[in-house]
Length: 242
Image (cartoon, rainbow, N blue to C red; front, side, top):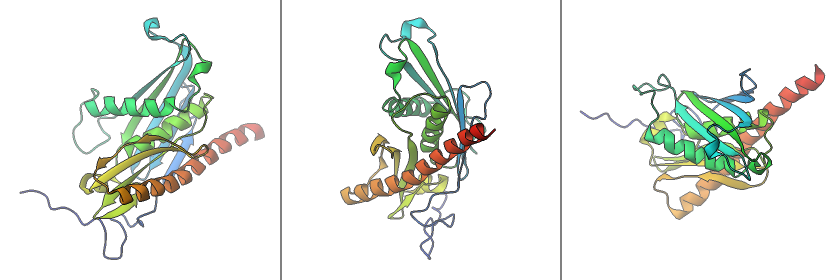
């Protein structure tokens, strides 16, 4: 017998976890948590927890992949086997390979790779607990880790996903909303320069819904972006004060 679909929008208009449609989950950020990495960040969107580490700029290995005019930016997105309730192989899945490419392309649009020819910048994103929105939390964590490593960038990138649940557009979807919703729109937004650097759509939205979803994502990403800047300021203010 198939499982019945849970009620995701309550009678009072609130979502399954009690949030309003345009409300983010509680967000926590911390940087500089890995001593052996040049930059690192831990980002939590509700129950989703993602760790990112950056190594570089450093010598490219193997040298055959080095580029004469810019750094090679390499990204590995990976979900730990214990991050989900379902059994997952430690080996990279097709989805993880695809998301590694998607996040890399988003970051390449803001990182000044031309400042480090023949070098590599390696970004590792590890999802340690998954509860929806892992790629957008991973993008946020990677951007923070790059900033923590001192890698020059045009801007920070804040990630957030908008979903369509029971006909309602909702911000920052959780696992249930992702699984049973009608659409999922992950967005990476560089709020300081006003550029969308990641945009995907799983499911179907009307043209009008798509426009509203983009605006909702931008507003949500601007809040995430403000938290990112605050996190960075706190660390370096503490350095100056010590």
